[in-house]
Length: 431
Image 1 (cartoon, one colour):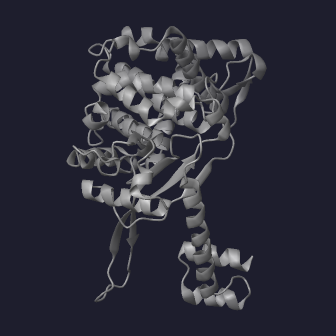
Image 2 (image 1 turned 180 degrees about the vertical axis):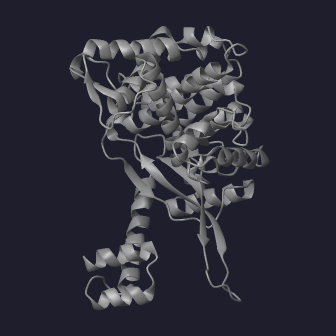
Image 3 (image 1 turned 135 degrees about the vertical axis):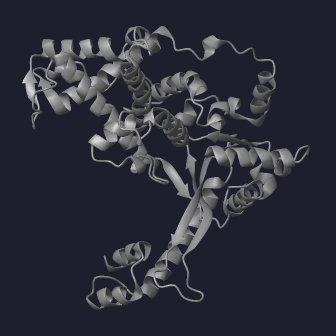
């Protein structure tokens, strides 16, 4: 227990003086013991990482590598010569081995470098049709069930519960393609003193990953290597690869490394653009943008998108969305002037379902958006489109938490069309 506490205290930044006092009380080990334990653990982690990166017989693709930039600030309260607040820019990451059951369900011959290059050659002759990005009839019906489940969730949590839950509209949409819930096989990379904010920096990050893998540059690039990163990392990597082209050596041209935009980064980029489009102008009191809902909920408008805290941004969007649904339900029920009950009541299941159906038809259906004129009813027009746009962000976030790839892909198809109208970030739209 003492060793466990000492390691946690080191990570928490506990001072040496306080650690010595706790050591005297028998609560923790000495700081030297904690450092030696961390050194031993790092040695074991480095060995496990090298073993995990060793090529496996019959598996032509390497484990997925996810990287991201990391900014750490060392704040000094009492400044002096040689003691000032400093910011360290680096990178962190991990490797993720796919579950063996997933590999068994795949045709591994389709994951080879030969198949990868054959697929790239077909892209130039691919005829892109608009129907590729449009949802099918089944996907439209599923998205309708998603919207009704979001309405049902607000109805059950804040207004009333159905008398019979089994016969009511469910608060969770139907699953499509859930992944295996087994714990992932993840190995952390050592923190890298190189930032991925430039072509030179991403080159240093790649070299650091290769050195940690225990492989040579030639061995690392002999197989297809999939990597995840944010949009800036991918653009910098493409710039680095363009500088090294043409070259016949895989370890130099880096053509065997395929970067893809991570699911979380996609959610954060699109969600930030949608929130910006619907945020409004806080300096105008007659502006009923999303900031008005945050103000009513006690959240300052300047704190809607905290710096580097995208999870809080998603939470704020969920609060705005559920507050809007709550108001729409009270409009349907004719109780906008009634006092809000502290605890949800009970309603007959048939009536409960009818309220949700009526709320969907009036505020969420495509017919409702088409029949509303921007010139005649600008406030209602903005509300209906914000409900639709925010619902996609909430569904994507919940689908990722539920581990349902099918639900997430359906939202990505919707974003393929929606992103063309988002002017805040053209880079995400282009990618």
